[in-house]
Length: 113
Image: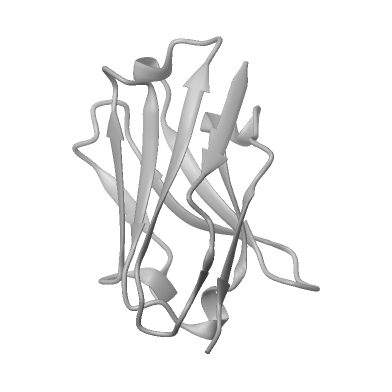
């Protein structure tokens, strides 16, 4: 199993980023997927989840209305569109499979002016 995140960067407050997670080695279309983040000096925080077909999505309260999770099962790729970014969104963002069994290596998102 391999999960490879990309798309992290330094962005100004109010900016946008789209993260991607390329999956391989398992049946991606059969797995719920998650985004989890870890801010500097803090623990892991679940951010969002999506069901297998992409029709049901879930978010932690702090990102509702700003972040959108999606997936393309034809490309085995998970996405996180992040809009109106805030300094408190600064973190390493990880994608993880259902039950958090497999994780990617993470991608750094820094929101600062």
